[in-house]
Length: 137
Image (cartoon, rainbow, N blue to C red; front, top):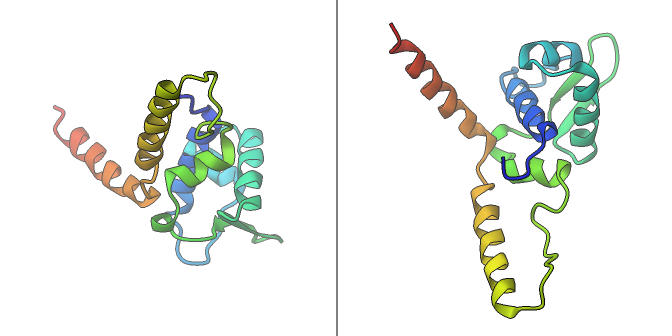
């Protein structure tokens, strides 16, 4: 899917789960991995990256874990992609043709705008999915 790795897909799933927590509550990696169906070792790497970039906060101790550093309304898909993917919004072109450079610039800008969707929108997709399931017989 448009060069998005499973790392980013798992990160979105983890952030979605963390977004369901009460304010200042934390969740352990094991819990997130189970609920979001993510391999625990892989999730650990992902969460560390998101923490380094200020999207998550970790709390140490027996009752520690991870929580969002800001609300899902303030985190966009683009924020996550820029942390975990390489070159998806880069300006590196393999051409000297000015028309092709303009073409790739326009495409990059369009894609970039589409990725500015806040992760709070996941709630709308959750509702759509539950409505779809309710119509089955």
